[in-house]
Image (cartoon, rainbow, N blue to C red):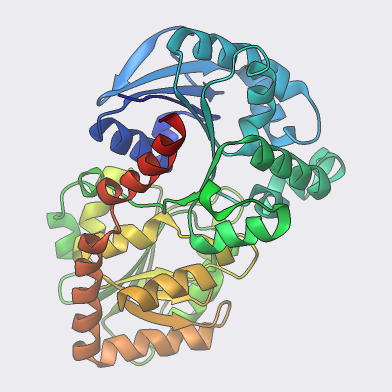
Length: 401
């Protein structure tokens, strides 16, 4: 039985990928502990909790740590703050495998393993942080604009990639992009996408939602509603399509602290805005009801280096629910839709292209049902955690044996 210690910068409850992977590893027979360097935890440092069969320890890093994490590549403060907690956990748990979730915590890991290094270090590059961090609000204004350096984030990622024994990526495209820059053997990389566990989505029924949307053709967007996710072009494209069919409805479940007001203003000013429903944040276990009343799941993310090489969690939520998909032409998600035969692809940031895709599915029940059937069957063809986690274990076991 492998002992696997996962290090992450937030609570496991706020990291869907970490939670899902931890569960998959534990159900595959591994002993799993997760150290969450969490700025918001109310737990007493040192207490172990159980999330299913996974041991979890939350360590509060405080207000300074909560702010310093964004400067992980730019100064040593965050690394120093977390390194002792990481070292204590390694010494206490004695893991065979140290799984580092994203490069935020890498500076602390570097310090901790100087004294006690596990047999295998796995780096989970769930996001292309050097690229995406440039689009976060904190890096575009105030001190963040002055202090956060793309060059230093690239250097941090490269340092971590070279030091790790195994690398985990969300897509083949992300692995290839990183390998083209840093250079490492293909055997060092494992691809585990953002699969989900269906029972996390809650009951696939809701009388209230069924009553609200009875007889309607519902399109669903779930997740962060920031404009970089293509939500503005989605609302505009839906407005164009809604002029053709009076039973089209668009539901957005999620929120954006900085930009939700932009969507609210669009809803008020666009034609047919009364059929755009901004539901705000909803807990994950309530999404089943929304999936149940929907026919199409939408992921209109805009093109950038990160989005081009990733799979959003929502894609697999849609597939599990048997929804037809409409996605932008970011290569990774477009390739998934093409491979699964589950939907249509539109040009990113193009409302007319989005409208055309919506109308094509609304006007052809034959296409719609074929895509929905393919979506459902794709989950049984390897797009799930029980199958995927075996690739991970096979890769690390070759090093342990």
